Amino acid sequence: KVHWRKNLKATFYWKYSEEATGYRLEYSTDPDFAKARTKSVSRKKKEGTLQGLKVNKTYYIRVRPYVLDEGTKIWSDWSHRIIVTRKR
Image 1 (cartoon, rainbow, N blue to C red):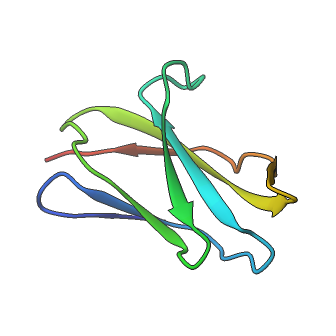
Image 2 (image 1 turned 180 degrees about the vertical axis):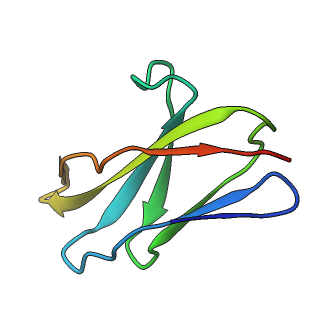
Image 3 (image 1 turned 90 degrees about the vertical axis):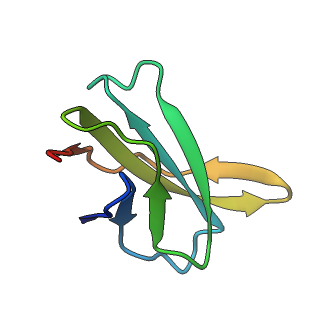
């Protein structure tokens, strides 16, 4: 789910996982996520905010949880990608 803010911020929501140590949010203007940017989100949150998104640009977003096992991050699969466009 996506909620747009007035100042070109977008907040994304996902289902919370109790097993997850944290989440990685990845976004790109390329559908194959080439040159994608990432953002880490703490375990206690089930939302992430992206800033500086441009008007009339299409963004592709996906998220995946991870757990820490003896200091090593073990990643889950990526979620389905979400396609969003900021109209104004």
